[in-house]
Image 1 (cartoon, one colour):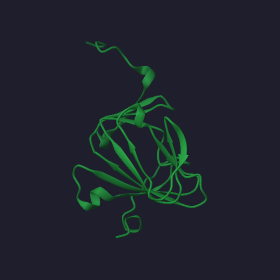
Image 2 (tube, rainbow, N blue to C red):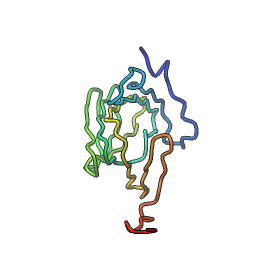
Image 3 (cartoon, rainbow, N blue to C red):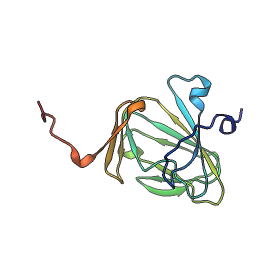
Length: 148
């Protein structure tokens, strides 16, 4: 089954530089505890902003093309068949972009545990359920006892 041809999710409102095709493979297969999304990035696009997860682990498998991966160790170009793990926390921060002149496809596998997401470049935190995720500036943090 060609999921990108038949099951592409429309994502209106994505800003320039973050547009991609997406198919929720895990959901299509009926998976409940392991997610998998297939992303196709046109030249010049990124899948998402640089981020890390608390409470969730991901793997990336390059299906086609030569995406550029950014991690805390720096940037590197990946090739078809490469596999990379993004562990929970700061060591697993990542971003995937397409700096080549041809489309790239990557499959992202996830443990599907809901946790917080931190975006170090923009200094924000994403929290809450997937259907009502909220974003907060990290510098707006308050003391544990605030408001009690």
